[in-house]
Amino acid sequence: MKKMQIDIIAVVPELLDSPFGHSIVKRAKEKGKVDINIVSLREYGIGAYKKIDDESYGGGAGMVLMCEPLAKCIEDLKSKTCYDEIIYLSPDGNKYEQKEANRLSMASALLLICGHYKGIDERIREKYISCEISIGDYVLTGGELASIVMVDSIVRLLPGVLNDETSALTDTFQDGLVAPPVYTRPASFEGMEVPEVLRSGNVKKINEWQEEMSLKRTKEKRPDLLK
Image (cartoon, rainbow, N blue to C red; front, side):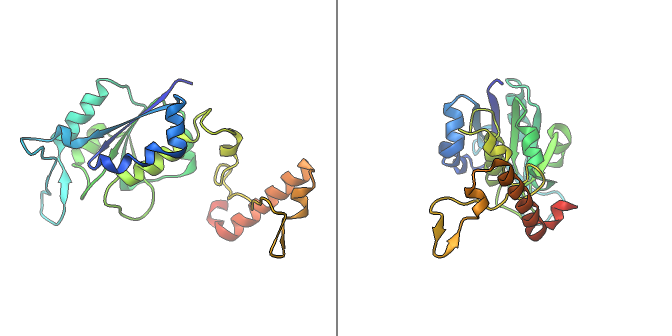
């Protein structure tokens, strides 16, 4: 699999520097698995003050990201890269779930557009956006924080990023269930014991126990997943 490219159009690009410079994402970049390019929308702003937003037609509080800077930025990036998806991060997008992370991890190139203020001009959505995503039913100051969540969830699925590739396959939600309980040393802690089956070395029984506990936990914590 060739290197994935993720480009992110941001109003506040500085928010993304630290998250993408540490941990799994940093390791993925160092291994040559992904390139992450953060683009400041302000560079494409209008006039001496690099204006990128304006008042909403029809009135009301809040500013809207303008057509011209976004269109200029998107067209510039598209001239260099053929994107599998152009994604707008917005509270009214489709709810982001593990299956979508799995799908996007198969892409070669993604363009993420971070919403801000009251959002982006509707005409940009109509002309350029192929996929709209929300990470939850709440509102953030901007889509930059949502893009961090998305990129992390996608990059960790790329082959060769995690030291043990089977780890991602056993994560919560991968099979539609939450993960079973996990334990580590010591075997006894303040009178609480690690289940005997996990210390038995019997792989068949351990797998059966994990499946049983995963289903039990899902019924208790996320019964909606079983629907």
